[in-house]
Length: 111
Ligand SMILES: [Zn+2]
Image (cartoon, rainbow, N blue to C red; front, side, top):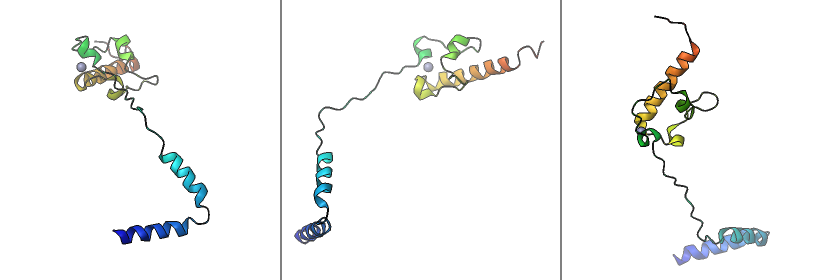
């Protein structure tokens, strides 16, 4: 134990003999920065919008609703950003895809 310490000390001392002053000064100032109460975790409560509003089925016709979960380029916003639960995200995705299909093929199929 003591052997290692001495060995290390001698090694570091010999290596840092040239320009060790500036190096050590920088290092110490950076590492000894006081961490005082900097713990700010953003943990906003994310609850599924559909669960809170008790919307069971997502309709593809509800464009205003769907729009909230679609990015500008028509990308579906990931669940971790919206806070939608898995079940509703799946329904939402389906609804959005349906809406897309309809937008793409407006009156193509008339029964
Ligand atoms: Zn939900």
